[in-house]
Length: 81
Image 1 (cartoon, rainbow, N blue to C red):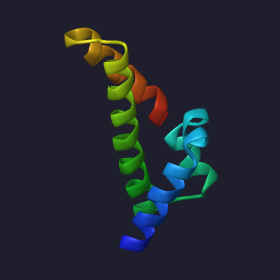
Image 2: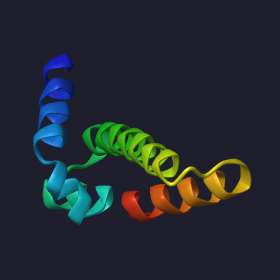
Image 3: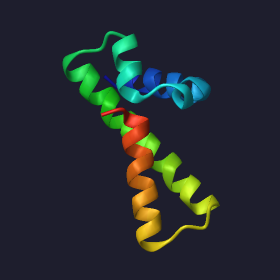
Image 4: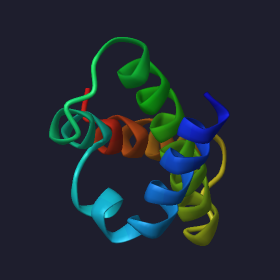
């Protein structure tokens, strides 16, 4: 299980451009993931997207409600659900 998680982490890190172009849901479908593998992938992808969106909000110097709103929309768009 740890090997699978490490492989997914490497794919996500190496495929940063791919992640920016397609949503987590689209990537899961493309990889034909189902069940526990899809759940694990979606959880990690959503966590990674939240970190990325938080960084973008920091770059834009957003705070309070603006940051929350921006981050929520960014994550929702990135995850694709």
